[in-house]
Length: 445
Image (cartoon, rainbow, N blue to C red; front, side, top):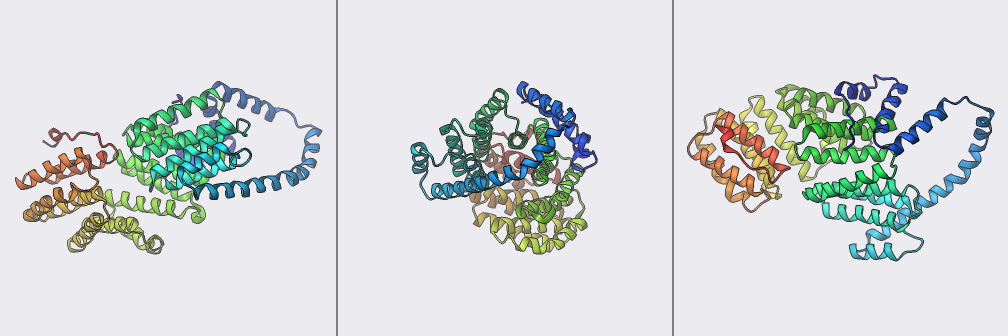
């Protein structure tokens, strides 16, 4: 990873628009120049050109622009349409047939636009089907490799390799993710990759991996730099996407005020709701952070405002999390009956849909605490007894199951306290993205 450090104050000044454009550009240039020798040469040349006096040549160039555009725009449109047809044809085939089709082609399946479309498809599928996302990113890299004359070949190789790493991350194959990111960084450093958006994308995806690994300092540095680069490139939506992830990082690290501030800044950059699901995610996260911070009335007000927004996403995954959040808010406001009803509905819904880890989190983090605060020891024991037989057949990994067994035994012995339960819940949150993380009961003493 390049030795680039971005202070938090600087990040906020940029994302809030408090720095003039000339200063933002200069900051971005300084950070880009530290990436590699080629970047420094290119940017230095650019700065010399910008500083050179304007001559009559510029007037002649501007007179030629309409003719140049008239020639280039139809070509780009044809390439876009052709790439879209190529993508549609590839997606209709099996994975093996896609690879053969690309390898055997002579003229088709060779455009940089197709590479980018494959990366976009991979991004769309990375959460729901990490295997397919990995295949599509690898297919994009194959297209780039099959055409040595493809414009921006190394930029595209770096982009597709980093997307492969991101798909491996989503599939919990961190060893492969590390290898792919290492290769992407090698290409960036040794082959003069200077495309600002690609550099930002690589930083963002690698920062997400470091967050999963709980390497918070590295994750913050990478994500902050990605936000800076997207800001420099003028991409407000992608800047907001990175800030949403940064907000999660700060919450995960226990800095709720900064998580709230960061997510609020992210929402300000989402004009027109260009990505409705990202907007929903940011609104949900902000409501959740307010709830965790004890600002229950503000959180309830946000849910009330967002009722129509949540109706646009009727799938179970979203609605169960909404029910869970409503239960948390009700519990914080002292509405025990409403809280228990919502939390039990969320837990049962997660069990029915095969999301055992979420069900475990509802049971440990919320229902147990609710019962403890009300002195309902028998309900705590009953809840703990229900955990293991349900979750053994679901998606809770071995280390987490060991923690749940200890939780169950502590409930039987009536040794659970609010503080102990919070420690179990904290472990489960961390272990979710790190199945190898061992449970250390000594920390609960």
